[in-house]
Image: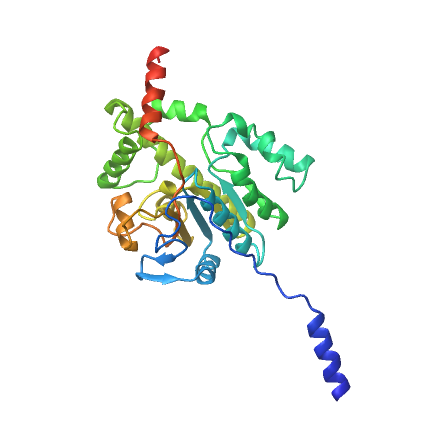
Amino acid sequence: MRLVLAFVAAFVAAIPARAETPLPSFEAPLMRDHVLVGKLWLPATQRFATPDEVVELARAADAVLLGETHDNADHHALQAWMTARLMESGRPPLVAFEMIDAGQEKALRRHLADHPGDAAGLGPALSWEKSAWPSWSLYRPIAEVALRAGAALAPANLTREQVGDIVRHGDDHGLPPISRQQLASIGEDIKDGHCGMLPDTAVPGMVRVQRSRDKVMAEALIQGMHDHGHAILIAGAGHTRTDRGVPVALSQLAPTAKAFSVGFLEVKDGMTDPAAYGERFGTRTPPFDAVWFTPAAEREDQCEAFRRHMEKKKGKGA
């Protein structure tokens, strides 16, 4: 009997334990000592949670939406961490990127067919350096963990040509219906995002583009759920908010699908109440299923940069 027990103990000891994916260290330089940095908060129940608890909540969903601030490296590192943890259970999901549009799908498929698992070369294959997105080095870790686990990658955005057509000739036909209040809220966000310098005549077209992008992202998730059982979306936090955006489009296009949205939010000086971060979104509390607070990235004055951009366009007669 002792011999049998000794054999079992030796066998169990020889089984490698599942290595937990370590949490990344924060890199953004501003407000790293803020009391909320690194905390996770569940708005629906108004309580803090552990990373493992949020992972388990996400695993119970059909679609997981990971909402970033595009130029914050910590948000991408946490997206990669969440993606890696979600890959640990069952069939690998589809991972859809807002940053890859429908016109790049052939290049995406060709690269992965010729160079399976090559995340490093995917950026150049997609001509990433010519896009307006931050460096591919920020997104590459997400693609790496997905490809390593055998997950499929997919585009989840409109082409520039489609955007132009929607702005010039589009209407609301075919878009999931939303309330007048939601429409007005999207319009205000677009105005604020362009520092109040956008002509009023341009706002309705850009609202249609925003809603069309939400629909395209929802459709990518639905296709992923159909083909792979579940899906992950990498996108800006504005698209992943639960009171509108992709979750609302998804609920209308696939009513039985269960979505879980994580918003990665930068902390603000003096703002220590998690619920107060809903102010940024014009809501009582942050419009996400879970919020993960991070330090803030250092960036130039975005309104000043946009002002220079608009002046440059005027100078070209645009």
